[in-house]
Image 1 (cartoon, rainbow, N blue to C red):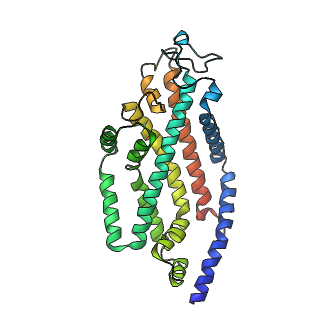
Image 2 (image 1 turned 60 degrees about the horizontal axis):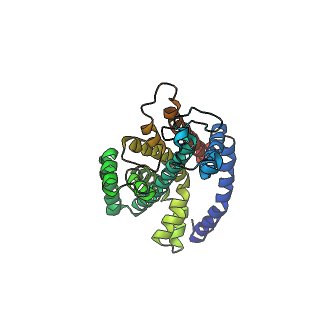
Image 3 (image 1 turned 120 degrees about the horizontal axis):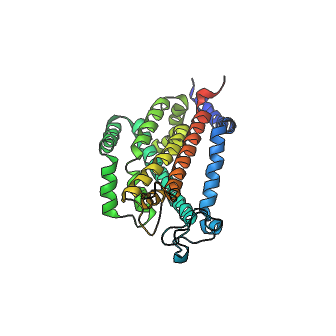
Length: 299
C-alpha cells in the first residue's frame, strides 16, 4: 500500500467514526435493561441534585419533638433519635456516594488509560517498568491501602477519599487498555499517522486512545459500581465519610442495630439504594459492552 493510500485511509477513518457512534447508540437504545437502568440513574441523579427542595428539610436539621417517628406523609422514611428526616439524609447520602464513585471512576480511568496506552505503544523497558509497577499495586491489599491512606490524610472532603480509593482501582483499567492498544497499534491507520509525521503523543491520544473508547467506557462504568461498594464498605467500617457528612455506607453503620423490628427500614433503605444503583450501573455497562462491541455488528 502506497503512502498516499494510507493517508487517504486515515481520513476515511475519521469519517466512519460518527457512523459507528450512531450505530452504537441505536444498539444501546434497543437494550431494554440498560435503557431502563439509564433512566433510573438519571432519576436518582435528579433527586440527589436538589435533596432539600424535594424533601422539604435541610441535611442534619434536628427537631427533637419529631424524634423516632415512623414513616408518614411528612417524613417518608421517618426520623431518627435526633429528629432528622431520614429521607433527606438518604438523598444526601446518595449524592455523596455517587459523587465519590464518579470521581474515583474519572481519576482511575485517566491514570489507567494513560499508563496502559503508553506502556503498550512504547513497548520495551517502558512497558516493563509500567506493568511491573502496576503488578506491585495489585499485590497490595485494597483494605490496607485504604486504612493507611484514610487514617493518614483524613476524609475531610471528597478529594482525599477519591484520590486514595483511585490508588486501588486504576490498575485494572491499565491492563485492559494495554491489551486493547496492543491489538491496534500495528494497524494501517497508525502506520499512516507515522508516515504523515505525527508524534508519539498525537498517535497515543488521537488514534490509540480514541480507538479504545469502547473498552474505556465499559471499564469506567464498572469502576463506578465497584467504587460505590468500596466507598460504602470503608464508610461502614469507619474509615470513609465521617459525620456530619453522610453516605450510604455511613447510614448502614448508624442503623446496624435496627436490622429487625419496626425501624428496620432505617437499615434496609440505604442497603436497597446501594443494591439498585449498583445493579443499574452494571446493566448500563452490559449495554455499553453490547453496543460498542464491533463483533455485535452484522456484516
